[in-house]
Length: 332
Image (cartoon, rainbow, N blue to C red; front, side, top):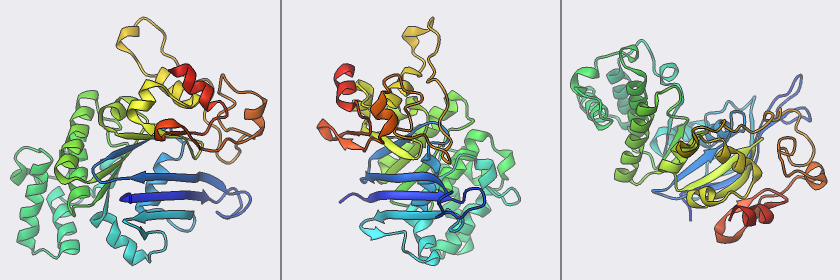
């Protein structure tokens, strides 16, 4: 049994003048299923607006319900999380599932030192004394490789660089030793060198603790470096699911193919960078058939008329494309 299992997850929000469950609702996540095992990293990949972050927030249990409407199943070690009471879900958040958000400055409280924020979490959730919580806070700051941890715990968030603030966010996320860590675009707005340092820190902590990592990203370079498996999302649905090796060896969906073609390559520096034509569809007004057909060079009448299901392919992968087998054959 997988540590974390998500089946047919659906998340909708009220449309103009309607409720989340009404006909005019915006379906942000539409039937997402995935599984994550201890010690492994699953990357959810896609452009902005594909439903990646909403999926992560629904798994974490931090969406406001209502206005959001969440259906399907999210199970941690076989226990259904979507039916827990708010108090029970609060216990899961942090202790069993931790989360690193995109914007550390917006998440950290600017009027408290980072040490106070870490210590307060430990006092409330672990029942530690003030002195014990402070000692543990220093250990956590040192754990995320911030120099002079004993002194830096007295500093406020604005006194840290962007990369250091993200390290503090990681310290908060792992403070209660969760089994699953969700990292939602953890390297956004950081320069390339700092991005690599942050991802290496997360990978190091994962190796030491054996926790599972659910990584939300649009960066194929990060995926290639740290992930074991990939779920590619488009318009609220998973359109391809495979191992990292399989995806880079040959995609089984035209959208994945386009994402890979968009990656800068050192051996093609003189070529113009490829971009997938068009833009992702408005989730409130999805086109008929395959949502990607308006941007897809392989689209035909079947694609324009019929929504493809996520169907299995050899070697445990899956693709939601009417031309999946043809594409996989060509890519090989």
